Image 1: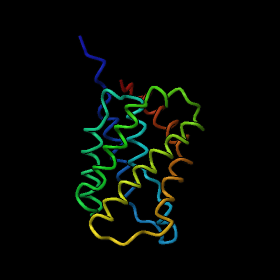
Image 2 (image 1 turned 60 degrees about the vertical axis):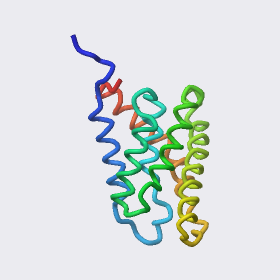
Image 3 (image 1 turned 180 degrees about the vertical axis):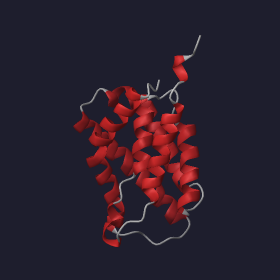
Image 4 (image 1 turned 90 degrees about the horizontal axis):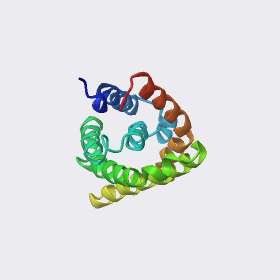
Length: 162
């Protein structure tokens, strides 16, 4: 007898690894401010789809790994992703019933909170205040949300992630 309740962990890890890869790819300087928050979007999806499997612990570990890979202050992404995941897990039943456009608005709010927490950490360590373009990834992420949701939903169905 197999336990179908815990299958598909490899698909979750693969999507998070791909998101980290996309987050670290070099971009032209002009487009750097508009880099989508791939890791945050993928974490939001998995927290919505599987709140009992992917939650604050996963977000903290993924954030810590992203801090190490990107060279930011250790714990900056971990803190922001943990708070983000907590909010999404707590509200997952409400957000999931929304149409994709309304979900995108909810994702925008969550991504703005994530950016605000990162800004707080940067201010706490004495970094100068970023330009207005600092907030652009949240807007880009909200615009991309319907497509990210559809692609990850198809991955979840194809690999029977439960």
